[in-house]
Length: 268
Image (cartoon, one colour):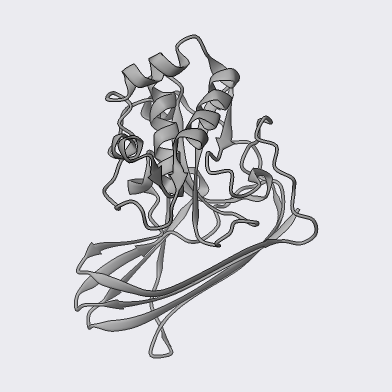
Protein backbone atom coordinates (compact mmCIF):
# COMPACT_ATOMS: atom_id res chain seq x y z
CA UNK A 1 0.00 0.00 0.00
CA UNK A 2 1.28 3.47 -0.89
CA UNK A 3 0.12 6.42 1.18
CA UNK A 4 0.88 10.12 0.77
CA UNK A 5 0.36 12.55 3.63
CA UNK A 6 1.05 16.24 4.20
CA UNK A 7 0.68 18.88 6.87
CA UNK A 8 0.93 22.67 6.65
CA UNK A 9 0.89 24.78 9.82
CA UNK A 10 1.23 28.53 10.30
CA UNK A 11 1.68 29.85 13.83
CA UNK A 12 2.84 33.00 15.62
CA UNK A 13 5.24 32.91 18.56
CA UNK A 14 6.18 35.40 21.26
CA UNK A 15 9.84 36.09 22.05
CA UNK A 16 11.95 33.30 23.53
CA UNK A 17 9.63 30.49 22.50
CA UNK A 18 10.75 26.86 22.33
CA UNK A 19 8.48 24.40 20.53
CA UNK A 20 8.32 20.78 19.47
CA UNK A 21 6.55 19.30 16.45
CA UNK A 22 5.24 15.75 16.26
CA UNK A 23 3.94 15.53 12.69
CA UNK A 24 6.46 13.23 10.98
CA UNK A 25 5.40 9.66 10.18
CA UNK A 26 6.94 7.18 12.61
CA UNK A 27 9.89 5.20 11.26
CA UNK A 28 9.41 1.47 10.82
CA UNK A 29 11.78 -1.08 9.22
CA UNK A 30 8.90 -2.75 7.38
CA UNK A 31 8.36 0.06 4.88
CA UNK A 32 9.78 -0.68 1.43
CA UNK A 33 10.14 3.04 0.65
CA UNK A 34 9.95 6.13 2.82
CA UNK A 35 10.35 9.59 1.29
CA UNK A 36 9.67 12.70 3.34
CA UNK A 37 10.45 16.40 3.54
CA UNK A 38 10.08 18.88 6.39
CA UNK A 39 10.49 22.64 6.03
CA UNK A 40 10.17 25.18 8.84
CA UNK A 41 10.70 28.80 7.83
CA UNK A 42 10.38 32.33 9.21
CA UNK A 43 10.17 35.02 6.54
CA UNK A 44 11.37 32.51 3.97
CA UNK A 45 14.49 31.63 5.98
CA UNK A 46 14.96 28.08 7.29
CA UNK A 47 14.72 27.42 11.03
CA UNK A 48 17.26 25.15 12.69
CA UNK A 49 15.62 21.85 13.74
CA UNK A 50 16.81 19.18 16.15
CA UNK A 51 15.30 15.74 15.58
CA UNK A 52 14.73 13.72 18.74
CA UNK A 53 13.64 10.07 18.89
CA UNK A 54 10.31 9.42 20.61
CA UNK A 55 8.35 6.35 21.66
CA UNK A 56 7.33 3.72 19.08
CA UNK A 57 9.29 5.11 16.14
CA UNK A 58 7.96 8.64 16.55
CA UNK A 59 10.14 11.72 16.23
CA UNK A 60 10.05 15.21 17.73
CA UNK A 61 11.42 18.21 15.85
CA UNK A 62 12.58 20.85 18.31
CA UNK A 63 13.04 24.55 17.45
CA UNK A 64 13.73 27.86 19.18
CA UNK A 65 12.63 31.41 18.36
CA UNK A 66 14.45 34.29 20.04
CA UNK A 67 12.16 36.93 18.51
CA UNK A 68 8.41 37.03 17.89
CA UNK A 69 7.98 35.08 14.64
CA UNK A 70 5.40 33.93 12.11
CA UNK A 71 6.37 30.34 11.39
CA UNK A 72 5.38 28.20 8.42
CA UNK A 73 5.72 24.42 8.67
CA UNK A 74 5.38 22.18 5.61
CA UNK A 75 5.70 18.40 5.86
CA UNK A 76 5.03 15.67 3.30
CA UNK A 77 5.72 11.95 3.13
CA UNK A 78 5.08 9.09 0.73
CA UNK A 79 5.27 5.68 2.37
CA UNK A 80 5.07 2.31 0.64
CA UNK A 81 4.67 -1.07 2.31
CA UNK A 82 3.42 -2.33 5.65
CA UNK A 83 4.89 -1.66 9.08
CA UNK A 84 6.36 -4.57 10.99
CA UNK A 85 4.50 -5.48 14.21
CA UNK A 86 5.94 -3.85 17.30
CA UNK A 87 6.95 -6.07 20.18
CA UNK A 88 5.97 -4.80 23.61
CA UNK A 89 8.38 -4.94 26.53
CA UNK A 90 7.14 -5.84 30.00
CA UNK A 91 7.88 -2.26 31.11
CA UNK A 92 5.62 -0.91 28.35
CA UNK A 93 2.81 -3.27 29.25
CA UNK A 94 3.00 -2.08 32.85
CA UNK A 95 3.15 1.58 31.76
CA UNK A 96 0.08 1.27 29.57
CA UNK A 97 -2.12 -0.44 32.12
CA UNK A 98 -1.70 2.39 34.66
CA UNK A 99 -4.10 5.36 34.94
CA UNK A 100 -2.88 8.54 33.23
CA UNK A 101 -3.79 12.22 32.99
CA UNK A 102 -6.57 11.86 30.39
CA UNK A 103 -7.37 8.16 30.79
CA UNK A 104 -8.46 7.86 34.42
CA UNK A 105 -8.94 4.10 34.48
CA UNK A 106 -8.97 4.00 38.28
CA UNK A 107 -12.05 6.24 38.38
CA UNK A 108 -13.83 4.23 35.67
CA UNK A 109 -13.16 0.78 37.12
CA UNK A 110 -16.75 0.34 38.44
CA UNK A 111 -18.18 1.38 35.07
CA UNK A 112 -15.89 -0.99 33.18
CA UNK A 113 -16.75 -3.97 35.36
CA UNK A 114 -20.47 -3.16 35.25
CA UNK A 115 -20.50 -3.01 31.45
CA UNK A 116 -17.86 -5.61 30.54
CA UNK A 117 -17.47 -7.77 33.65
CA UNK A 118 -17.30 -11.20 31.98
CA UNK A 119 -15.39 -10.19 28.84
CA UNK A 120 -11.70 -10.64 28.12
CA UNK A 121 -9.11 -10.21 25.35
CA UNK A 122 -10.48 -9.83 21.81
CA UNK A 123 -14.12 -10.00 22.91
CA UNK A 124 -13.52 -7.18 25.38
CA UNK A 125 -11.76 -5.09 22.76
CA UNK A 126 -14.71 -5.24 20.36
CA UNK A 127 -17.25 -4.66 23.13
CA UNK A 128 -15.48 -1.51 24.36
CA UNK A 129 -15.20 -0.09 20.83
CA UNK A 130 -18.88 -0.73 20.15
CA UNK A 131 -19.98 0.68 23.53
CA UNK A 132 -17.97 3.91 23.23
CA UNK A 133 -19.17 4.38 19.65
CA UNK A 134 -22.77 4.01 20.80
CA UNK A 135 -22.54 6.12 23.96
CA UNK A 136 -20.77 9.20 22.55
CA UNK A 137 -21.69 11.70 19.88
CA UNK A 138 -18.91 13.09 17.68
CA UNK A 139 -19.23 16.89 17.72
CA UNK A 140 -16.36 19.08 16.48
CA UNK A 141 -15.22 21.59 19.09
CA UNK A 142 -17.39 20.05 21.81
CA UNK A 143 -14.60 19.32 24.28
CA UNK A 144 -11.79 21.18 25.97
CA UNK A 145 -8.14 20.25 25.75
CA UNK A 146 -8.19 19.49 29.47
CA UNK A 147 -11.09 16.99 29.32
CA UNK A 148 -10.30 13.40 30.23
CA UNK A 149 -12.23 10.17 29.89
CA UNK A 150 -14.45 10.84 32.92
CA UNK A 151 -15.52 14.26 31.64
CA UNK A 152 -16.15 12.78 28.20
CA UNK A 153 -18.39 10.07 29.64
CA UNK A 154 -20.37 12.62 31.66
CA UNK A 155 -20.85 14.90 28.63
CA UNK A 156 -21.52 12.00 26.21
CA UNK A 157 -19.80 13.82 23.35
CA UNK A 158 -16.37 14.71 22.08
CA UNK A 159 -13.84 14.47 19.26
CA UNK A 160 -11.50 11.65 18.30
CA UNK A 161 -9.11 12.10 21.25
CA UNK A 162 -12.06 11.90 23.65
CA UNK A 163 -13.39 8.69 22.09
CA UNK A 164 -9.89 7.19 22.30
CA UNK A 165 -9.32 8.29 25.90
CA UNK A 166 -12.57 6.71 27.05
CA UNK A 167 -11.82 3.43 25.29
CA UNK A 168 -8.29 3.37 26.73
CA UNK A 169 -9.51 4.02 30.28
CA UNK A 170 -12.16 1.29 30.09
CA UNK A 171 -9.65 -1.24 28.74
CA UNK A 172 -7.04 -0.40 31.37
CA UNK A 173 -9.71 -0.82 34.05
CA UNK A 174 -9.91 -4.45 32.93
CA UNK A 175 -6.09 -4.83 32.95
CA UNK A 176 -5.66 -4.54 29.17
CA UNK A 177 -2.61 -2.40 28.27
CA UNK A 178 -3.87 0.43 26.07
CA UNK A 179 -2.34 3.57 24.59
CA UNK A 180 -3.22 6.49 22.34
CA UNK A 181 -1.81 6.76 18.82
CA UNK A 182 -1.73 9.93 16.72
CA UNK A 183 -2.13 9.04 13.04
CA UNK A 184 -2.66 10.26 9.53
CA UNK A 185 -5.96 8.73 8.43
CA UNK A 186 -6.78 8.52 4.71
CA UNK A 187 -10.54 8.61 4.27
CA UNK A 188 -11.13 10.79 7.34
CA UNK A 189 -13.70 13.55 6.87
CA UNK A 190 -13.26 16.31 7.84
CA UNK A 191 -9.53 15.76 7.38
CA UNK A 192 -7.34 16.42 10.40
CA UNK A 193 -4.77 14.72 12.59
CA UNK A 194 -6.58 11.72 14.07
CA UNK A 195 -6.36 9.92 17.42
CA UNK A 196 -7.11 6.22 17.95
CA UNK A 197 -6.61 3.66 20.70
CA UNK A 198 -4.29 0.65 20.61
CA UNK A 199 -4.73 -2.34 22.92
CA UNK A 200 -2.41 -5.26 23.60
CA UNK A 201 -4.35 -8.52 23.28
CA UNK A 202 -3.35 -11.98 22.03
CA UNK A 203 0.31 -10.96 22.27
CA UNK A 204 0.13 -8.00 19.86
CA UNK A 205 -1.00 -4.38 19.55
CA UNK A 206 -4.31 -3.84 17.78
CA UNK A 207 -5.90 -0.51 16.85
CA UNK A 208 -9.49 0.41 17.56
CA UNK A 209 -11.20 3.59 16.40
CA UNK A 210 -14.45 4.14 18.30
CA UNK A 211 -15.35 7.05 15.99
CA UNK A 212 -15.44 4.69 12.98
CA UNK A 213 -14.53 7.65 10.77
CA UNK A 214 -11.70 6.12 8.72
CA UNK A 215 -10.42 2.65 7.72
CA UNK A 216 -7.76 1.49 10.17
CA UNK A 217 -5.72 -0.42 7.57
CA UNK A 218 -4.66 2.78 5.79
CA UNK A 219 -3.66 4.75 8.91
CA UNK A 220 -0.04 5.83 9.40
CA UNK A 221 1.38 6.24 12.90
CA UNK A 222 2.91 9.55 13.91
CA UNK A 223 3.54 8.75 17.56
CA UNK A 224 1.98 6.99 20.54
CA UNK A 225 1.88 7.36 24.31
CA UNK A 226 -0.16 7.16 27.49
CA UNK A 227 -2.71 9.71 26.24
CA UNK A 228 -2.82 12.98 24.28
CA UNK A 229 -0.36 14.62 26.67
CA UNK A 230 2.30 12.40 25.02
CA UNK A 231 1.13 12.87 21.42
CA UNK A 232 0.41 16.57 20.79
CA UNK A 233 1.32 17.60 17.22
CA UNK A 234 2.63 20.98 18.42
CA UNK A 235 3.66 21.91 21.93
CA UNK A 236 5.61 24.66 23.65
CA UNK A 237 8.33 24.00 26.20
CA UNK A 238 8.94 27.69 26.81
CA UNK A 239 7.14 30.87 25.72
CA UNK A 240 3.86 30.58 23.83
CA UNK A 241 2.40 30.48 20.33
CA UNK A 242 -0.89 30.88 18.51
CA UNK A 243 -1.86 28.45 15.73
CA UNK A 244 -3.35 30.46 12.87
CA UNK A 245 -3.78 27.92 10.06
CA UNK A 246 -3.57 24.16 9.64
CA UNK A 247 -4.17 21.95 6.62
CA UNK A 248 -3.82 18.14 6.63
CA UNK A 249 -4.06 15.71 3.72
CA UNK A 250 -3.83 11.91 3.68
CA UNK A 251 -4.58 9.70 0.67
CA UNK A 252 -4.06 6.15 -0.54
CA UNK A 253 -2.71 5.45 -4.02
CA UNK A 254 -5.49 3.17 -5.23
CA UNK A 255 -8.62 1.95 -3.52
CA UNK A 256 -9.24 2.91 0.07
CA UNK A 257 -9.60 -0.23 2.24
CA UNK A 258 -13.08 -1.15 3.44
CA UNK A 259 -13.40 -0.87 7.21
CA UNK A 260 -14.61 -3.94 9.12
CA UNK A 261 -14.85 -3.08 12.84
CA UNK A 262 -15.02 -6.78 13.76
CA UNK A 263 -11.48 -7.48 12.47
CA UNK A 264 -8.29 -7.19 14.48
CA UNK A 265 -6.05 -4.66 12.74
CA UNK A 266 -2.56 -3.38 13.54
CA UNK A 267 -1.33 0.05 12.51
CA UNK A 268 0.57 -0.44 9.26
